[in-house]
Length: 158
Length: 158
DNA sequence: CAGATGTCAGAAATACTGATATGG
DNA sequence: CCCATATCAGTAGTTCTGACATCT
Image 1 (cartoon, rainbow over the protein chains, first blue to last red):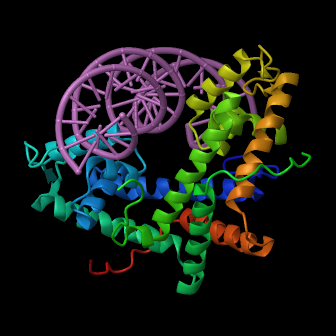
Image 2: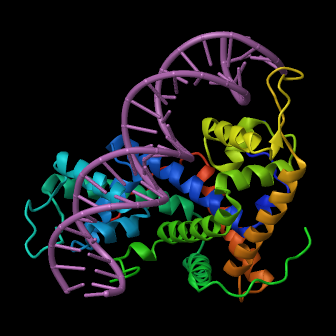
């Protein structure tokens, strides 16, 4: 009984399958990022700053699925390692946009390539159309969940 | 800038969309489980024990995507609340199969119904065939990721 | 002996909560 | 005034790591 014993009807629910994919992906990302001494949150931060340099701390946190406090610690850690730089004083007031340093850019490129390989492995053997349909289906799930809670349907029997 | 600013190409990657779905689903589950004073891990434990009463601690942990240590704490908490019962002494040796109490069964039923409503909301407006295809696509992702790491394709340019 | 498990303990990262202050 | 933000502090839940004993 080493791995994944079949569960009741649990692993037939969409939600459980999503959890499984997320766990598998997180594991794969941890694995390829560990040699670079990066956590998933740290990678996400570097990647986000690369693609959207003007993001604030709170925006980075939301986009990386962590709290503002955690993202604050991530930013400090990356700054301490010389991967990003932040102006000591805020120009206007609240925002202190972080910026990738030269070494930060180099590390992000390597990490990004590693993560892209994970993505490619995950998508292996399927057409662009299939993958696009998959992503669209997931986006529909997100949209449905973000809609204000609809009326509760009468509970089904167990 | 209240919610979800468009990201670069990040939100076009399948992996990022999966993270988004997972986050949305976790949020929705937290919301409906909070009135029942249950965390997602606690609910998963109750549901798993309902469907597969013989699961060991380690198996529960894997199935609920938490560590053995965390699942151990979850089990103790549920036991302290009288939702499950565990034989004080192991019959054979290592395994101490937990069992839902009467109140545990009642709470699981309510929690399960709430989570099913979340699932239904997430799947709203799509046919069974579409949802089955979606789940199949995700299962293919899991299978692809669990395959032993294939040869790294030549890195693409950034 | 190898492998999986149950348990314990300490360190670390993360989240949740509340409070304060600033800026739009 | 309202809202989002940035920050700090305390508490709690989770993970990671290592360790040890037990059972198959």
